[in-house]
Image (cartoon, rainbow, N blue to C red; front, side):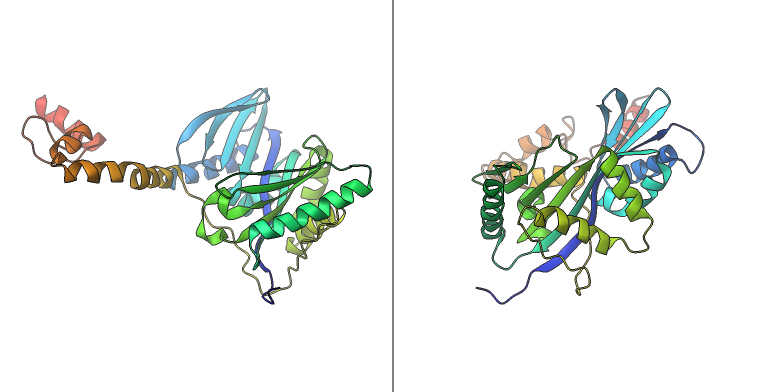
Length: 294
C-alpha cells in the first residue's frame, strides 16, 4: 500500500440554480448574471437559446439565464459557480439546487479507489435492506461513476473519475466527491454557507457527512496545505481548436503529402479562386471585398 497521502485539489460549489424577481435595475440577480454571461462570451464561448421548466433565455459556457412571468432563473456550473455562488445566493429569493464538491488526487488511482468505495457502499446498502440505492457506470475509455441514492431525493451523491470527465491535466488521477441538494435543503445550506467568512471547512463537513452516512469516507481535511483551486474549463473555442488539431489536421496533412494542398486551401476558403493567392478568411475579408466591388 502506498504511503503517499491523498491531496485535496479543489473544494467548493460546483452547481447552483437560483430564482429571483426579474428586474433591469443594477445590483440584481439578472444584472449580475448578465455580466457573467458577457464574460463567458469574451473567453470564447458561444451563446445559444436555452429553456428550463417554462423559463426561456440563453446559455453561454457555464451559465444559463432565463425569464418567466416576472421571474429570472440563473443556473451556473463549473468555474462560474465556483467563483460566483455567494453573490448569486445573496441576490436570490430561491435556491432550487446546490451541488457541493471535493476533488482529491489519489495515489492508488481513480479506478481502484472508486472500486473500494463501491464495495463499502454496497455493503452498507445490503445491511440496510438495500437502501439507499447504489449504482455505477463504466466505459471502455476509463470513465467510472458511482451513484449513491436517488436523483429524486433531496440529496444525491456521486463519485467519479474527474480527469476522464474533463480531460484537463489539472485533474489527472483525481476523483470527485459530489453531493447534489434540492429545494428547501439546497436553500438552507446555501444561506448557511454564505454567512460564513470561510465556508470551505463547512463544505467539507457536509460532503463528509453525506458519504460517511453511507460508509464511504472521503477523509476531507481543509486545514491541510492543499491547493484549493478550480481551473477554467475548455471554452467552445478551445474545443473547436482541439477538434481541428485531432480530427482535421491529420486529413489535411495526408492530402498535402499527396500534392493536393491547393485543393485543401480552396476547400477551406483560404485561396481566392480567381487569383490563386492565399487570403485571410473571415468577416473582415468579406467586408473588404464587397467594398471594393462596389
